Length: 305
Image 1 (tube, rainbow, N blue to C red):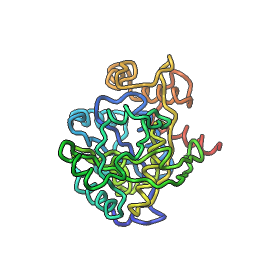
Image 2: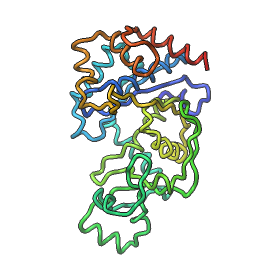
Image 3: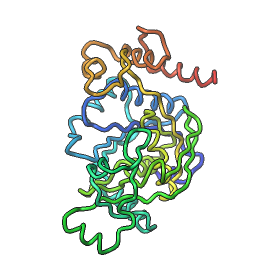
Image 4: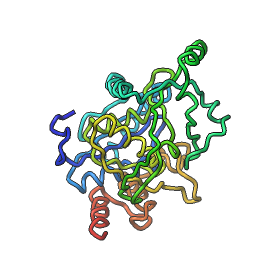
């Protein structure tokens, strides 16, 4: 990391796009990339790309190469070195060890099937909230479980409220323990988990504003907790409404009509930018927009608020 960015309240506005390369991008992914680029440029800042390929089996390098090529086709090029999470395990280990030294990490022997079968409450996105099953295991119990299972590691969250101001949705508040639950920071196979890796990478890259889909809103509370525990500055968060297909369904990589690969075969970059900005309610249907046109729309929106 550029040392001039550390603990500097006047550090440059920095945005980022961090796709998981498990397939080709769809319009929703491109929308997040475009808006993060536009908000960074509107502030005279820089924009970075990071490849979140923690799970190398699900994220072959050719998908990452295709994503980078798609971004380049649209004119969205990173202002710095592109980071690959699969190459940063030693950096995550340092952060993990810091959490351990604070007594925040414990072994968890529960499988996903165990959680699904439990009567644990569920969060707003439908995932089970961890009930703390392994938090108070005795050394004898752990020793017995270790004979048949390799544990993951979870962070123990406090029973206290977390609050942040989202630049789109306003104040967001939850109880960390009851509404989020202890979360995995290292999987049983040794791979570091998303919440830890994304927090470390955003902090060490000097990211000042995280722009992404609103489906990731709950993660912000967990990441803010980690920022504070690791001594990092907390960035601003701007969560975006999810783009949907004309029939109302959420876009996914399986939708051919929204797949950037299919669109590249029949559309120009300016036409794709127009489709995205129209879907976001920012321009008429059929518009063809350059990146400068899109930037003027965002700057104009900011001036009108």
